[in-house]
Image 1 (spheres, rainbow, N blue to C red):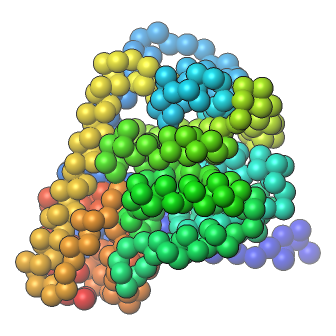
Image 2: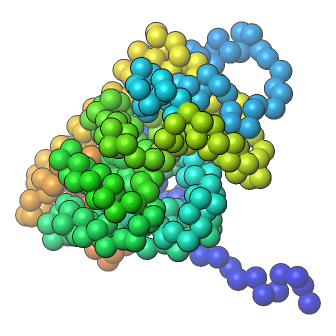
Length: 398
Ligand code: PMP
């Protein structure tokens, strides 16, 4: 008998499974709106100019590759702190933020989850209903019980904010609440500034722990605008967790560049927190890789490259917004009766289209247009060449 004879086949990752199906599809018009990746108007994954420039400089003075410190490149961690909290902010200046380089946003979440399991071993975790698939799995694997808070309202095509507040109000003190800082994945619906204030008030009053996942900073309204919510939590005097991902904003998906920042109550506490974050890293993968972090640090810490990055990120953001409008207009022109205007009130890479599972399956099998069964489509993969085809296809299934 084999050691593995009782090992069950795990279900395929829904998104990566879609990718495999897409790659095998022979339809010449096929369009992949499944995976959360930004493609340019030629359907190509961009290699940002600022990244190329930083890499060129790095290549001109090649360096040996020793181990990084457990918490990563110091210049990188400081750049993340500055980006997320503001370089001159009181919270950074007073040394209350502990930031560690992480293996993508996923790594930031995992390190945070492992650390939280030591701090609040019996806490429950709440994620939005629905949320990015991996949120649940990451916290379950760290040993937590995971439940949801109300979020999406299908009838209203927006956020069920009363439901969200009610869920948070009903949570036990110490509950960990995973919040999408901006560009909610998968729905594309964010809450307003005033609603954030209400969420923060409940988090504070009920003694909840906020874990803000910021995977799309700069894809919503702008870098500072999208990051502003972090400042609100800090101003409320809360100890928060923030995971950062540069996968999308630097188009560096495969380099796995991210971070975790934890806000402590004072400098001495932050040092103790950092020491524990390092244990979590050390026991997971010892220390992070160099290249992606070095590129991002080089860009963020150089005024010219930084300006170039902001410009390139703005171009991505603006193009996505233009595609949303084209989608709304194109669907109307293709004869879709219902008002699809809600697509432009969504933000970030995704649109919950409201299409049913059956309609999504038909889009795939009859037209080679791939989105998830939940009706999520990645609008960042639409372009001037495929938009008409996608609109025609949707019009035929609704
Ligand atoms: N959080 C959310 C909400 C995401 O959508 C993603 C990426 N799809 C991540 C975290 C993880 O990002 P990364 O690829 O950098 O690990």
